Structure formats: structure tokens, C-alpha cells
Length: 334
Image (cartoon, rainbow, N blue to C red):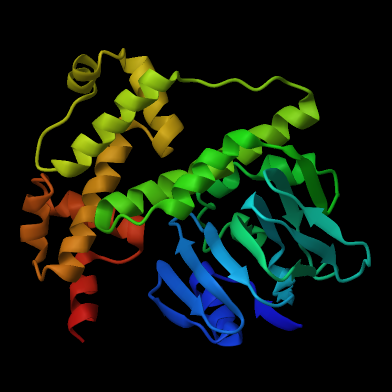
């Protein structure tokens, strides 16, 4: 058994790669571990989201039983697990009972210094898993600033668990489609990043919705029909493909045949944000890509993604990525 420290997804995956002797490549926001040796074969991907959410995605088969301990529980992590394919086991260090995490099961785990998690993965089992976590210490104000909105919304989950360390729910097939998108997404650049972020947020939303309705005995419902989902996907692809154009909710509503209320609901359902925030995030993600890979300066990137105000771009970029675009360029050149 070996130990993995809980922190960002990329740092955890990098250390996981050392234990598995795999090939790791990545940076701060994303990392990829390719495994093809006597330990196993497949891919593990790490994604860090802006609101202090970390995600580890398994698409791998291990050729031997694997057991590891998660350390850093003093940060009181909260895990959301969903197994699309295969199964594995979990137990706390202070307990001996193994709990099986089955295919399509919704599981929430709460960690503390008294409750370190032990994960046991059986040999020769094809695994497709998403693990999303946040550190509850991040929910506390930092330097006088409140925690991000996304993580603040999770406080009610901690309260709702009523001191319980874990929640092993019933099967949740609806979450499977988002996990499938997350695992199968291989698109590069801004499109791939936005699909990844949307899938992660939808997985989390689906698991939270299932948990809430389970403890309240409420029925679940779908906000959009299949044809409406298709229209929203088409709009999202068009926006990302033509970021230099001007877009309004009214214009997109006419184009899709969906009223503005349904349009906004559709974007929140599929992409986890309003129409305007989706467009802003797509432009910022594309601009970051242009700065990092195309050698553009800040003004060129601003123009290329359909923005006119460099000061607005700089402010929004720093809010999303924690660094000014000019400082990013300086770092890349150093």
C-alpha cells in the first residue's frame, strides 16, 4: 500500500504516476498519465477547475490489486465518486468494513484527520471513474475574501450528512451520460476544455441533485427534451467556432426557436452557466490558448476572440486564471 497526498488533481496524479511508473505530462490546470506496463494499461486525467474543484478521471485496467491511502485529510476533503464501468472498494482507516462502489452508484465521502480513506482496486477490472473533490478548508474565507460561489453551494451537503462520513446512494443512470462525455472527450483546445468543464459541473450537479432528492424523498425530473438539448449543443458549437461574432440572447433565441427563458435554462443545464457567461468563458479560454500556443500578444488575442476592451479582458482573465495575460506571456518567455 502506498500513500497519495490530497491537494490539486494534477499534483496528485503526478505522484500517482511515480508509483505506477507511467508517463505523466501536464501543467497546473490539466495533466495526463498514460500507463502501459506490467502494472496496467490505460489513461488517467487530472483537471483543476477555477472554483477549487479537482477532478481525476480513470479509464484504465490494472493488472494487479492496487491499494492506496489518501493523506492530507486535515484539509477535510469532500469526494464525489461515480463509477461508469467496473467497481472498487473503500473503507476508512479506522474501520475494517469494505464498502463496494458499484457501477452507476452515487457515492459521497467525507474525510477528516480521524477518517483517512483507503481505496482498493481489484486486478483485471476495466475502470471508468470520475472523482471530484474539494478541500473543505477552502470553504473558509481567505484573506478576507469569501470562498468561490460553487464551493459555497456545497455547504448544505455537509450539513445534510448530519455528521455521517459517507453516503452510498442508489444507482444513478442519469449521471452516466456526463461521465461518458468527460471520459470520451478528446477534443483539443477551447472546445475540449469547455466540454470538460461542463461535464464535470454537470456530474457534480447530478450527484448533488440525486443526494438532495434522496434524503427528501423527492422525484427527479429533466428540464429539457432531447430536441431542445440538440439545439443548445448546436448553438454552443457555433459560438465556440465563431467567437469573433457578436451574440445576444435575443438573437440566439430567434435562431434556435427557443424562448429566452428556455435558452438560459438549457445553457445552465448543459454548460453550467448562463449564455453570457458561456460566451465570456469561451473567449477567455480561446484567448489563453492563443497566448500560450500561437505566440500572439495580448492585443492580438483580444481582437481574435471578438473583444474590444483590453482592460475588461485583463480583469476577466485574472479573475478566471489568477494571473494577468501580460504576466502569463512573461512567464512563458522566461
